[in-house]
Image (cartoon, rainbow over all chains, first blue to last red; front, top):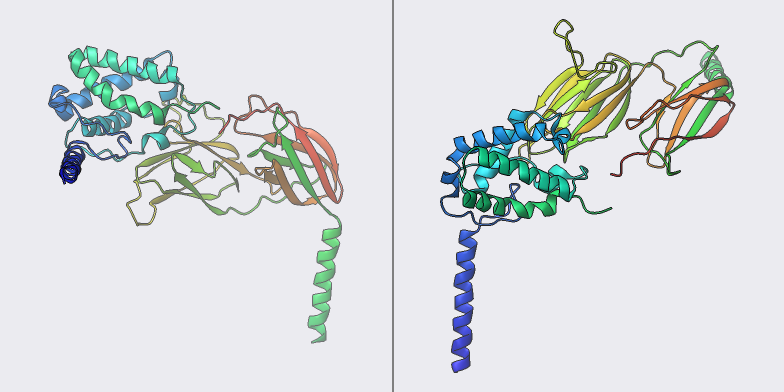
Length: 158
Length: 218
């Protein structure tokens, strides 16, 4: 009898915690197949939609100028890319945006992106976040949302 | 009745006669590593023979799907109309750049080719589409201003004596005259133009073309 009660309590507990997790985690979407709940206040810390757009305009400009990976963005429309990144990052950060572009796996298929390319892009993003005066702890909270994407972005070894 | 039958016989004879003097060519194109080279354009020229009649323009469709132009290479006669169809749920753009026009265009020179904007396809609805005409011969480049990684090509031909290699590296070109011919090759990923190859066409001719072209692994 005691065992039964314990089992029931455990089931209840896991059901409740499961519900809580389901509530706090955003669903997988084209924005990210690996949803992580954004840190509270992250969207605000990035200056909401306008702040994120300004950051992404700077980021895309730096990407195009980057000696390592700039070539990959040569033919890309900067305003369009910055707009698309803004929607995506805004949504991931918990803002009221919907990213409508391709999922990360589809977007990067056939590109042969290496780990070095991915890391270079993260460094460029860090430079942009520094330039915008975003606190280091907030930068890391954002990178934690983006980091799992490496699984979809980096090409599998041939 | 008799006159009609006579006509039919004459027609059959004419077809048979022209078929007898015609050749067909099967070309197998190989990449640098010896594997079949797909998406190579093989053009046949017959020196000393009258130029063939330029084929009539056609209407073809190129899809934009999962960040690719499908097919990635299309061969059409000069003046053909191309319909671009966006099957993705997100927006695409088409930039069609004719041959011999570098990326740098001066202010005095009007921009050639055409550009199209295609909205994303809403769920369960027809794919948005737009059209353009390819009005100069040779390799046209296709790109998407929104997604720089998207690449495609349209080979615009003034001759019916042209073929595109399939996955097995094989191109079939029917209805050729017999005689001395020169094969010219073009591939989207060629670094330099391959040397033309001379051969004699007679009946069903088969040949092999080894190239220094090594396509990027897809």
